[in-house]
Image 1: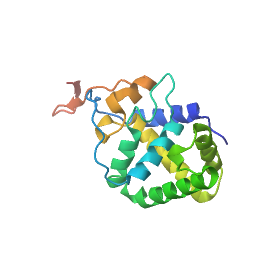
Image 2: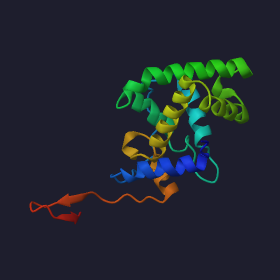
Image 3: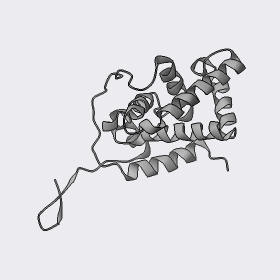
Length: 178
């Protein structure tokens, strides 16, 4: 079954937004120091995420800080994926160099898209890498901004999600706003 980018976006956004609880930050942080990726790996990640969720009339992965989120996640909560992700990036860059003589991030967008399409339907390792990257991309685009992605809450704005203020429970177990 072939999912369109828009349908995958809808499914991923709905799942991520459903679990979001904190209000979005309004400050735009500078890119943090790399925690899990090298500069070359970060460049490939940023390019790959931008092709998965490209900028059009709405913000894309770069605008939303997705590569920053992925780097931080691979150093923390998602560290179990780090080695596999980095190996996938090396293989993707190798395939890009074989096909186009350049690293993935320097290929034309059409060539980048062709590689993604081929890898989604490629070997088990290629498909697994692409699905891992898609998951991380949507986490970074639509998750709680406190985790390093969804810059300025713009991913939530994209899908019409407005986070609510934390709710408080009194000693009787009743819920109140504020």
